[in-house]
Length: 101
DNA sequence: TAGACGTAGCGTCATGGGGC
DNA sequence: GCCCCATGACGCTACGTCTA
Image (cartoon, rainbow, N blue to C red; front, side):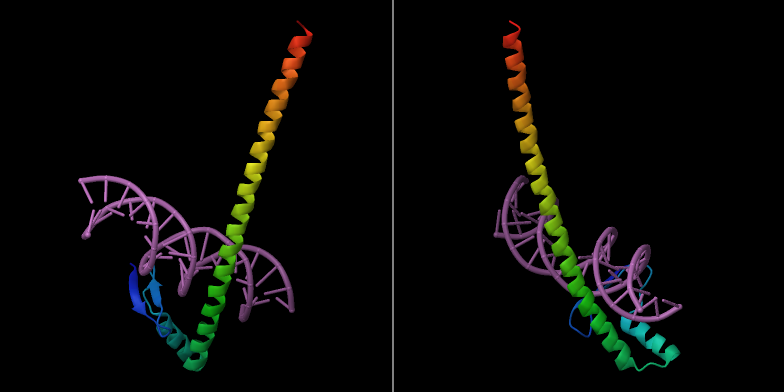
């Protein structure tokens, strides 16, 4: 079950995926009852965590993109090297053939 | 030109690993 | 154990391109 389009307190959209269909705030409230922590505290902590994770995800994607670009560059370099070596080998073979004629 | 389709980027959740 | 961080997975939106 997946519920989409729920508006959060921040105005962003929250997606509830899989078996968990309980709103995060509701969960926070429930745990508050258990741990006796003020709801404001829990909400604020959650907000801070979301902000940090948002930035972490952004950074993670940036690094991944950079890594992929590096790999692509490496592929290009290796392909060039391969081409050069093939050419070199061909030339060597030519020389060898003429010597033996 | 409207709708289908592919792609990039984003936010969020879940989770594993490391530090304390 | 708890906390924090990094990252994979998922769903959503925006945008560009193609096709009938």
